[in-house]
Image (tube, one colour):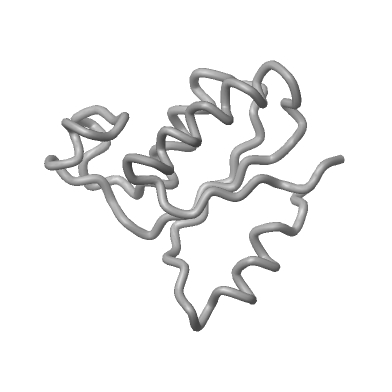
Length: 102
């Protein structure tokens, strides 16, 4: 089994990367885990520039993106992490997020 792929930050760029990776993983490597990390929630101002719907406003970006990707590709293994990455937690977080889940 391959190491997980971790995306930190699911704004405009991170959300786009998550979409593209889900397409790749859904076809080529559905057993590989995609870890989505973001402590932020969607706001109404995100509607025009991020892939989300009005129902996602107020929802955590990692959790909402994980739900959306899995609904499009049910074979995907997606783990949302509702947390911010900081200098203080970077090393411990990276170890935890790259640990393979069962």
